[in-house]
Length: 416
Image (cartoon, rainbow, N blue to C red):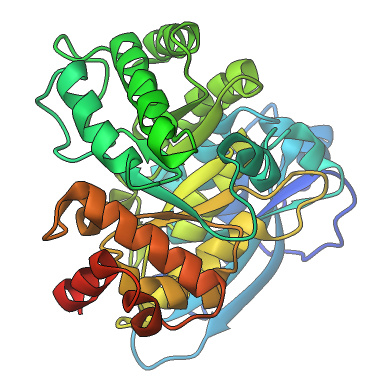
């Protein structure tokens, strides 16, 4: 019989080859079963199952079986938690994200562990299976003509229910305030009453009209999220209509669908990945951690920017998760470029200084309600945000900047 890695004892090995190394929190194990369960999981997620079966060769074991890199059981009087690192041969899935995720978290019931996937590393030449982003923050700065400060993004509100012409009016009011990028809300797709190509034409015209007053042309990211084939059609239609960027709800479409769009259209469109739905993937004792799902995976798939839920520090655990996610988007990963972090969610001008101090200038900051909900109107809200980001970037206190900008003073009073 071949030397199964997981039966009955586990060997920790020095890796020699191309592997994806997955780190898990493992729940429901104890000192008397943790080795056997971890070994069964390593085998069951790669070449075998819970019993030794015929047909498994020594070559399969050595070349394609999962291997335990490390295992640490954390002592506790309550439910014990193990930290497990498994190495998966990259040859088992290469750049096929669907098979990769099936291996990492598919969890065959016969060899199941209660796990939470919290990190992914690439060993050997495994990183060469992925191309990563084709565009960087420098490319975005050239598109927006914005340098030496964070880039400001607004999302059109209301989210749905309006025509392209009505949306173009909303777009114009924001662009008139000098915002750098405007995107569709993630809820607006290619609908019967508001189609992708029509939006691009109308919104691009609004951007040009606003630029006559502001001296800058706001970049529009159109939401092309759809089924894989229709998403490709949407991308083509958007480009033909003049689009330079797009949005994809990648949790809903699947990572492979995102990767295909990035591969085919990444040279023509700046592609932002949106995290909508990721909450169902990440929970306290299971699923996939945000640093993996919105930190590493869209980056490997080739997204140029990834939306990331902002945390203001009032919840220490959520803030820790946020910082880990941003680290995953930016950390060195061979030749793979960082993905541009895009923070959003309840941000007002009062948050900008903290975000700048934490993340620096190379970030996109998404602000919605604090622009459209400004007491003076949308354009005033946009103007307040732009004056605030200029002040923050120059080290000027907001209260000082507000003395020369009534819109910013009103915003501080409203959101403070």
